[in-house]
Amino acid sequence: MDNRPIGVFDSGLGGLTCIPHLFKELPEERVIYFGDTARTPYGSKAISTVQTYTNQIADFLASKDVKMMVIACNTISSTCLPQLRQRFPNIPILGIIEPAAQRVAFGCDESNRIGIIATKVTISSGMYEESILHHRQGLHVFSKATPAFVPLIEEGIIENDIMDLTIQYYMDDFMKENQIDTLVLGCTHYPLIRRNLERLYPALSIVNPSYEIVAKVQSQLEDRGLLAEENDRENVFYASDLSENFVNMIQKVLETEKSDLILKFKNLDL
Ligand code: DGL
Image 1: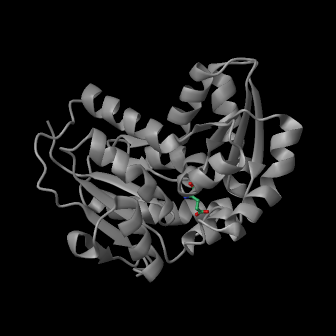
Image 2: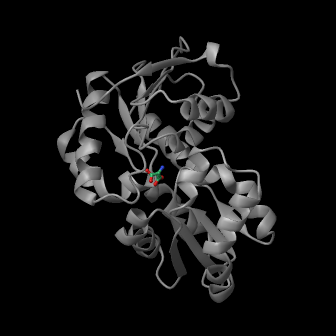
């Protein structure tokens, strides 16, 4: 038993999409979330920059005595996992890509046409394909960077024609040419446009890694004897920029009022 909090982090607000599943599946657990909203997006930055920022976030969470770190960001998971595990050998650290890759590998077969959409950094890392094919060779996997989705989502431009047109701009040819039937939302922002994707491509089976990582958190906590016994509900949400966008999005994703949340500013540059 371990009542210390779980540290969950993302380059910004996308990682919040994992939190409702985590609260639902693990109601006893306490969370400290960090979103680097001042420096997001990471997905089009140099890998060395992403790695420097990530070390700063992880140092901050370690200073809060978290019992586990959950990387609720595909971009960070695709580039920083080995360095983080080396930096904090005594803290279990979970990336979001591996659990999703396992789900795809064991849930699909050679007849499926699997599409991965994600940021430029995640796509150029090749980490999804590598992990999926590591578990099951012979699967058909296709990737596409869709970098304009994140800024639109951050602005709350979601349920309208601008988002639909942007999705079609990136994806129509990709979907058609590769006959995609299974789509992995390889960026934690993308569950927020799931409804648009389902409307535009109705036959599609969608894999949401935010679900898969929560299942992994649960099994790791169980295996390591780290499950919490009680929860004082003191979940704290840190952001490096407590912007209106962040506050709006957190209320939308968690379906709660601002007055019910503990929101804190933390500038990692200081
Ligand atoms: N949330 C990030 C991810 O899952 C994308 C946002 C960013 O580019 O920083 O890759």
